[in-house]
Amino acid sequence: MAILLEVEEPVPPTPPPPQWRAFLELGFRPLYLAGCLWAALSILLWVYAPQFSAGPLGGVAWHAHEMLWGFIATIAVGFLLTAGANWTGINPLHGTALGALTALWLLARIGYLVPGGAGFWLAACGETLFFATAAVALGRSIYQARSKRNYGIPVLVLGLGAANVLYLHTVLQGDYVLLLARFNLGLLCMAVIALLVARRVIPFFAMRAVAGLDIPMHTRSGQWQLGAGVLAIALLLAGWMPGAGLALAATGVLTCWQLLAWRPWAVRRVPLLWILYVGYAALGIGLLVAAAHAAGWVPRLAWPAHVIGAAGFAVLIIGMVTRTALGHLGRPLRTDRSMVAAYALVIAAAALRLAALLPTAWATGALHASAAAWILGFALYLWRFFPLLIRPRFDRRS
Image (tube, rainbow, N blue to C red; front, top):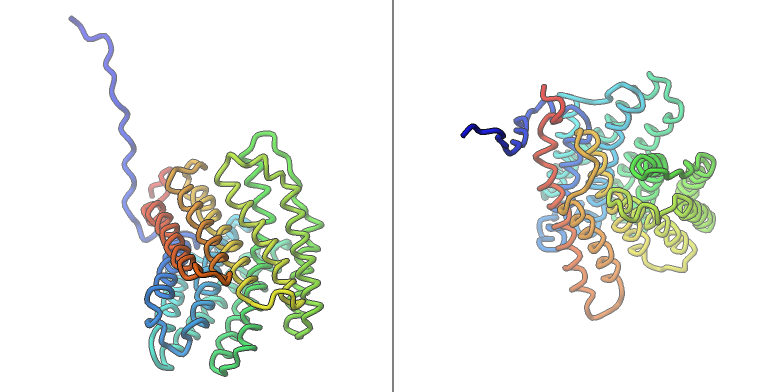
């Protein structure tokens, strides 16, 4: 009897092999991997093996520095180098130059862990070059393309690097009060960059993903928001805390108002979006907590630092490194279980870290649970995306 129909199971496409050229094609590839890997490793060291941070930059100063400049700012630079190529049509850094930038980042991470002054100075020089090189590369592509709406971005990256230099200088001075002020300065510079980027991309992502969703871009309020944030930085540098508190409060109120206008209920079924909304909300609330701290209502810096850093930046980051990586890798813009699990773990880590700040008997347990959730969350991201980030796009194999 003749066979009338033969059905074959579809064979999944074979992924292209890893390729150095692809890995160093855009800034997000090496720097997302480096930043997320360091997010997990640095917390592992800080909570479970603090004896390894024995250099001149040690203890709490090392932890605060590595979270802000070693992890958060690294992801921001990776995003901006990638977005800069889209904004201008000119890739700011790729190939050998991008590899050298990543090597500078790696030199800093290792150098700060080495006992003695030589490692510290090598790390400090490497990290300063890291931020300066990124700012110059961004500036070159942005100014060459006459992308006027982005003229301020290289300046903000330089400001982030300058705040790092001031922080490291204060570490050597041993002035703890001034060290907190320098950390606040870096935190606020990073917050202004995060607000500028998130206000642009979140509405764009939302309107592309949800049919019929029309939300405002808040260009005018964004200008006021940026102005208030820059004013807060200037007043913080001047040491006028009441004025800085008012500017921070204005920035936080504008952030929360923008989020509500973006119709958060409409994105509740889209994990790639609601994770960004949660992070933006936490960032706005964190700025209000920072304003309360500047006014003297919240005595401990740990509260604004962790609301902004762990609940704001980190949640935004786990969403952004997922959404933007999928887009630039030519992958479908949808999550799988591992991605949603990573989101849940990072949110849980932030909530537990804030709970650990409360004067309770279970504060230490909450701290260790937060560290475990944090490490697992970023490890899940690395497990899911490392094979993709080291390979060419599936739709372009050469």
